[in-house]
Image (cartoon, rainbow, N blue to C red; front, side, top):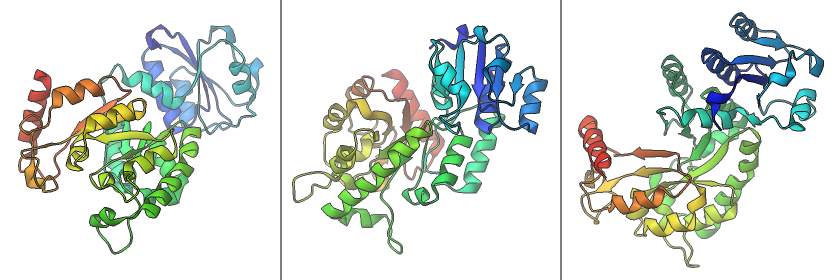
Length: 336
């Protein structure tokens, strides 16, 4: 979609934090903005002051010059019985959820992706402030599996940050144990975890979001039935997306190319992590700048380029000098 050709946008549910931010984006680009919300608030009044035409009754007749609308954006919070939503759905005018339009916008901008927040309110608030102050969008973020226990709160935070992809980085931790516990999970425990994830996929989809899983190395310890835990997780529901960590996939003694080929159409993000040696890859001191290790990045990134991957992150779990690590990694990646 070429957003530069849009002359007028109509928002259904314009008063929310995320929707109003999008409305301001289009207003600042000189696009005519109209919208509906059921309540008059400081947000809607501020949008009116900026030039938006806002109505508060769900009636088609109140939308001025409706024929000039060439894009409709709606929030998943809007009821399926909404008159305007049903009207525009039956027309040829493009109608999309907020998350989709955000994705289209990010194609034209550099984007900062945030991982590892684990739902902490303080961290999320700081990140949200930095993003808003600098006009940046968080395309994806990690959320702990435990955060799904407070599902509405988690989804609200994700929407507040305008995040599109929510990524679960590990199974639910057993209280009193550390990360090492995941190396000893049995087949039934992995199957149960896979089923629990699948229960949330549709909920996230209905809220304009995608749910994905990020691997470590423990998902590649082959089970007695010959299957890998990673297969059990991804094969449970084809709608679960894959954030593949190419470093940890290698550390799991498997070939990342095999996993890219098998789940090619589900990879939405990838993490790059390199190692000096193919021995003791779980030791953080063995990690090195991208390109200084033994992994063939040119081949892997060529494969990744044929997937729907939207985010590439470079990682080191314990760098002695993070600036040097980033600079060396970016220098290498730029060359290839």
